[in-house]
Image 1 (cartoon, rainbow, N blue to C red):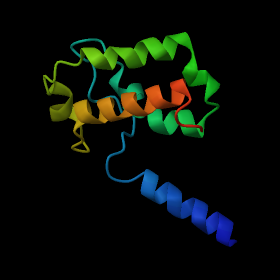
Image 2 (cartoon, rainbow, N blue to C red):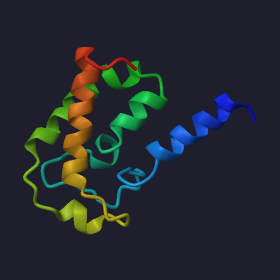
Image 3 (tube, one colour):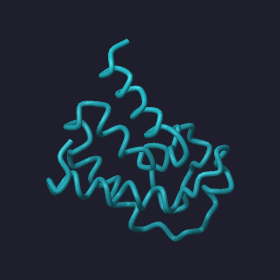
Amino acid sequence: MTDEISAFIEKDKLDLQGDFCRGCGYCMPCTVDIQINQCARMSQMIRRSPSENFKGEYWQGEMTKIENCVDCGICKTKCPYGLDTPNLLRKNLLDYKKIISGEIEI
């Protein structure tokens, strides 16, 4: 294994632990129609897949729904990983907006 591959693996380990949505969908449905299991992991998906797939009108609309979150907490109670889903959604929305605006390059 090269140093480059080892560094890549270490970075992935850091990115994919802790505050990371696995997309299981147990949090669904959302009371305000947020596609939680996709939006809560947008920061990962947009970096690990062809990013153009997630920059279009559809996903911008889906991500904007996060602004309608009422912090009911139902999604948090259903998460088998104990994630703070509303805050994770907001974190992903902020990152997404920075990517869409070009503030962050991926």
